[in-house]
Length: 300
Image: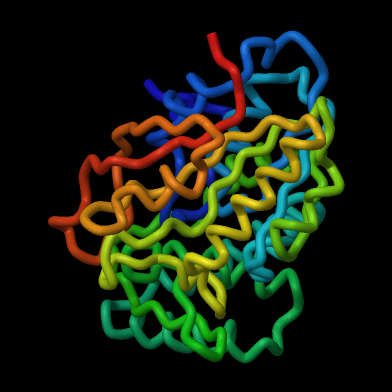
């Protein structure tokens, strides 16, 4: 049984490309030796679905403060809604679920497209946007979050028989956990002000694609190219100079790009691990793949 299978345990409330539920054991191996023995500030600038956040806050109650961020405004707005207005959010999701489940296949597809259009209109309240964000994630194809060049969500309908749109129990548990968390929206560099000898960063940026067709970096308009990967490396060097510790995940490129991260992070530790890929448009592309964990942490 994994951590997230226990009743009453906070777990990710959306499916997210690159989610780290299957990588938690490897991340744990990279944690500082004194992780559980002194107060810490935990910082996660690319929070995504929150798998590492929820796990680490429940496994290490000595963490006095947590700070999360992401450039995806709709995702961060959903975190705020769960933290601050969870019962109202549950009520909206219950309505969406009831209306959707009552329809036949064609009706559901039409309903999905209407909710997607409403979501992209930007004319909804923050609470409505959060409810639509979760609804679309649970009913779209393969749980992807992808936007076009104009920032519009464009993933097609998923056609699931019984999509788990509302999990009220988990949303309430997540809300309680988020009371310990400061939530930011914006670029990862804004979290640099938290760098100190008491800080531990987990960095999970959009991965460098293994191929042109495998890119999942379009979770926000603009993408995350090699220049952004280099900017993140520079950020890691700066927080290291402040005494902060960090763990970062990324893909393990092959072919001509195989040594990209070895060269980029040559002053830090890199190890290769196997991770389960849960989100891929091609079912043959799912399964265990090699990823890398980069760190400045000294472990046992």
